[in-house]
Image 1: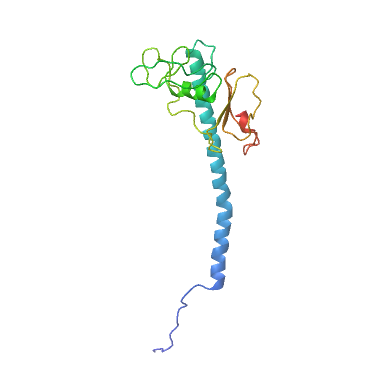
Image 2: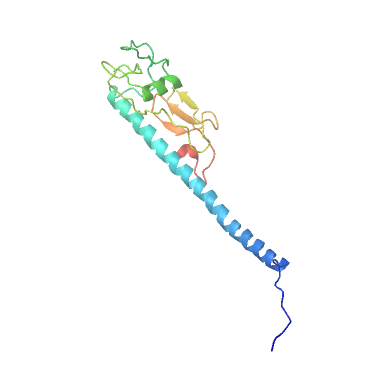
Length: 186
């Protein structure tokens, strides 16, 4: 028996099917997006802690190699006579430039720096790429104090804070991390 009745298939989705798909996508988004945000915050905190550990270790290594009583930036990085075509540091004592020079370039026992290692410039460099930007705000600003009584933050929201008398190096922010701890307390 042959039937001439043919059933025609629908050419698309019904409105209910589309609504179900949209609702499922909204639920998945509501679950997944906060997870990605938490992962970003966790990565920033891990990067902050790593950056702080690296810089603090370098600061301590500098102090030990420079007679154990001078932190980077406490003395001028300028005034050196460099060998060959080296460029001398340019930072005065107690400035961010002196601290940056003494971390990034070879130095002599007095803390004067030169872009070329050798001869009297046998210490360091301690941070070959220089002081990194803090990872939460991506700010490389370095606020330097020389009093030994640095109370964070020195200038709110500006990269790092450092004291040349105590060697204390912190993120210069009073804001709280996702765990409720001040960034400056890391």
